[in-house]
Image (tube, helix red, strand yellow):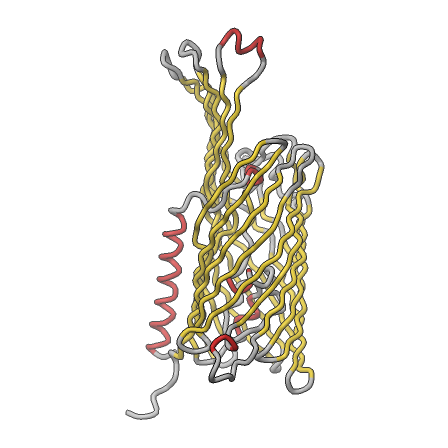
Length: 436
């Protein structure tokens, strides 16, 4: 490995580590009542590029963008190039339950990833992205007239903040021209705090403050495969699949309950559980398959399906993860589809013929049931990538319009408009000098 390549690898690792430190300081990546359960609200994987394709990417191979969904796709690249991807997202939600309405707005880093060649038809990628986010807050007054007639007004409130992040390193190789294999090591880390408080207006009564503070880590592997079959001279059919091994979470969960008031404060309960010993929680295995068909350099259509079974994850019984008896683990399934078209990459007159236009759709069944009912989200995505300097560097703008839940039973209807901004960078770093 040349000194320049070595420096590039070191720079990539340092940038990824810097992103990990920055990400650990973020506390609210989302705001939704559905994040009260389990590990929180699972983030949609992938960069801004895949988000504008409905989140699909298992069978996508594109040498202009990094594919963060299938590690086998890391070999779809110029063999001399250094590539990087950085994206942000803005999450806007509107909630309704019965006659109650509210709204939220959050902004966070979505991903940072870098890729570089290793040797011949092999390449590597490192990066970081959110795995799940916890962000909720609500309060209400007790209305029992017999109770408040004796104690005065009583308020109950609940808040939750925190995120679990995923740092990763992936490597892939292409064999026999059309078959690509990849493996990815994932490291999960994060902290989630949940606080529940009961307070009295009458100072002669002590309030109750209880909650949990979870610090978790874990690591696991993801395997990917893609096979690209040329169809004629311009078209290609690609099939892909990924499999993620189960991840056993480690760390600690502090559970506490305090009595606090103007007269005296007291610790009523405190316990520290060690994950893996006192309780067992794991992120389940996941399998995903995909297919895509493209006219090279002009358009591509793709479809993905993924499934993971959370019923044996241990979330229903573990402190810090279970919310109430209304929530139970379930089987998560996702259907995603996307389409991209570039009118004419070779047009030297009109800039907008170089722009990549995308549309996508998805239907997602969450990993939990609420009061025995499946919680699902459905949405459509739109986006463009505007080329900068050359056709390989680009700025991506995407929008995700969707709904989760419904207006029945204990559910909250959540409508959202999410905006993603992405930057994909491309540079030839590894070309040998021709002249001294």
